[in-house]
Length: 503
Image (cartoon, rainbow, N blue to C red; front, side, top):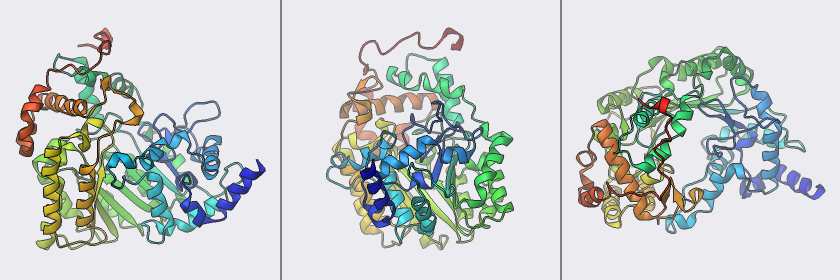
């Protein structure tokens, strides 16, 4: 125990050592993260089934539990201590899996884990949040023997319910009320065209989600709880659901303004299908603020991937957004997946055309993130002839584009996507041999994509091949996979839906 504490304190007192540590992460010393149901984690990457727990084993919830109690609970104290002592704890397996996955990317650099990204963002001199370094260092230095932190919470990530106006193909009911509603209807009215593995994946999760209180943030207890930590917050990140249509988000930002906390870095994510001028104007109050736009396609492909969106509305709102004062930072995030393999370069060309036409006169960040779940939307199981076709487009765009800066890094993004496409397929470790009852092979994952796409096209009256003509050479393989029963015996149970749940 004495030796452990010597190691602990030597690391705490040497920030440079901490940054090089293979287990240290800034988040337990500065941040809390809420799920849409109010449960609490250290960060967005923490294992979903390992939320911060009370002494009695129940899960903390932000609308009924004091944030200060969560902040220095025994669970988070234990996490801090173990990370500082060099343990790869189970709660953080998502980051460990990414950091140990070099072979999954064909020798290319794996995507940064949340842990490494947070070290670069908060602790490096050129990090986007380097101005929080002093606060972070104070919190680390104040860590007592058992992981208790004297300094107050500095960073808060909120997901205030799942209220959303879109049904994006890569999303799920926890993050979208529209998806939850759509899937419940499909489950209750199940027909024989629904792939059995898809039924197995959606049930019973979507039923469980429908029973959860997703409006907890409207309880006055939550706002009072937030007010306790608001004066010392240095960072507030809000996502959804769709934050622009959730009233509680405006209330908490109004409170930060009312108490004069200009130093808080306020940011939120939006699908930009609505224009909340009041919310955007409020961002001008803060010394640092940003709007993160979720955009995954161009024109028809955006409307297909983010079903329910309208490109003309999004483009019009974006043109209004870039007219905001430059102190409000604007970033575009795209989730790179099968559906937009041929579309992301079109988005970059669209941005470049806005710049050339003189409409984009400010810095706008553009970032591509490789999708993790669902597995059947990952690009690395697609045939090499398709990936080669896509890579050619990104190499051509690389040569075409002459504009790069720290934010709109077209060259860097193109190279990153090429690395994604060149990566090898490896079974996802968290599922073992099977995924939703289907044996994990490259071909099976591809067939799951085909079956999911065909089914959702039927449900939504959309057309994959009309929207994405680049894929037409795979139509025979696509059609051949439709009737194939992918699941192993005994996985498909006709009585899973209770009779009182059927229509």
